[in-house]
Image: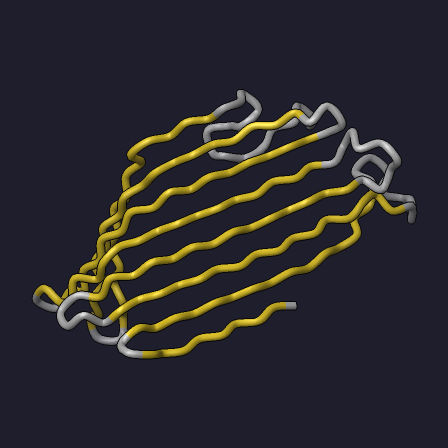
Length: 169
């Protein structure tokens, strides 16, 4: 289930979204059994705020996503948990000719834990993006360029893409 609440007040647009859910999964190596293989639960929330300041519109977005896998055994050898936090801020610069221009900066952090030995790691990235949007006839054209400003990982179990590799295939 989920909920979204949005409002405008004093020139500011504010939106908050929350969602959560879970599902049962079968054991990966035994698709012919009805024995439960585990439960995956997820929850997420996000907050976005923008303020119309004439020709420019500054904005801020914050979000968090939490994912957990429990294998339904008494041991937690195969349990996996990860949490992703993102924060972005920027400014919409208004129109240049027929193009709407936007510039943004963001930071992204991922924390992960796996198994009874609590193998864990984290990664952090900062990025910058610039985008331009226009319409020609009934077609929208969106051009964007982004660059990775910094990236670091505290554990070799985190791949370059920020995904978790527990060594199992």
